[in-house]
Structures are given as C-alpha cells and as structure tokens.
Amino acid sequence: MEELAEGIFKPIFRLVLWILRILQFLAWDLLVSSVGWSIGWFFYRTITFGYFPKESLGDLESCSWSKALFVELTGLAILASLIVFISGLV
Image (cartoon, rainbow, N blue to C red; front, side, top):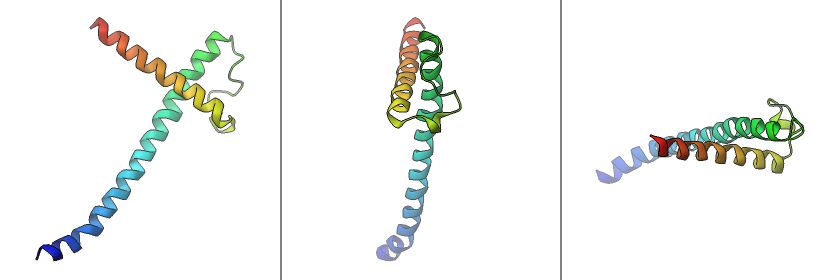
C-alpha cells in the first residue's frame, strides 16, 4: 500500500517542484532585474549627473550583462542598507 501511495504522489510532487522552481526564477528575475536596476539606475544617474548608465531606465535588455549586474547589485545593496538604517531608528 505504501509503494502504491508513493507511486501516485511522486509525479504530483515532481510537478509541484517544477512549479516552485519556475516561481523562484520569476521572483529572482523580478527582484533583481526590476527593483535592483531601478534603484541602482537612479543612484548612478544622480551621482554622475546623467552620464552612467547610458541606457534609459526601461532599456535594461540592451545593457551589457556586467554593467547590468553591477547596477542591479548596487541597487539591492542600497535597498538593504536603507532597511538596516531605518530598522535601527525604529
């Protein structure tokens, strides 16, 4: 009986695992690409008076991967720093 239950539920668990992996990819892509790029883009555009990055805010796809990663990680670091700073005030 136990083997029968395992045989029935194993495909269901595999399907659920694939769905969760797809959701994880989408969450990562949305978080890093959208939020990180936006915050980093505004930060660098402000401190360089509009010279870096040359791409517009909605033009992430035409940016090189190394520049995009740099701007995205900077944006996420700024976000994390603000959260830590404001948490210390509360």
